[in-house]
Length: 290
Image (cartoon, rainbow, N blue to C red; front, side, top):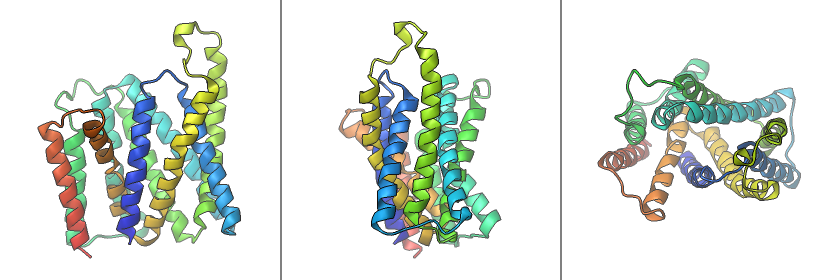
């Protein structure tokens, strides 16, 4: 059953990625957008806490949720910084190391191991994702921004591990997500307010063309996919292997590629087709391991 939840997380995060890709082409305030993304997650999670009579059982539960909020904020900030100063292909590859980091840390922290077939499936998926992300224009001489890509991968890994930790504490899912989205909302709101003070003094060429209300409402819409993805992935972590769940959820890039092919009419390169086929084979191998 965990693989169903992981695939749902892949779908929701893939749609979120499509919306992120679309908004990245617009002149808007990214901190305000992400404030909206996290704020609607906070409202939905808090409503679910009240509806399903969930609760926080102690400071450990609250702390994990707050740490998830900080981790999400930091991961997005580092990823954005990396794309602003380095090559997109390099940052994409480095941030894609998340499943590998999660597999290693899950073994060190909880002694989680994989069967031989599961390990083969993991590396087939991981290889497929890397084939898609890999670019031939990367060399040892153009590693600018690499540190930000690595930090993004580490913090995304940190989030996956905290998601797993919340299930080990038997924390209620929506209580954890309320803490996460609430703290994340606060951090993005403070970043938006701080940056807004500087933008006011800039000329019109540097100011966002989207209004505050339009940007925030767009964030609210994207946030629906984000909270659904988080609920799905935590459900997967509750019953599945941490590294495998992380690897499958990382396949959301395939959803974005399909969108580019079907909607934007972009053609697949041979490299992308090989990567797609490889990743799907990996999922089949994992399914056969049960």
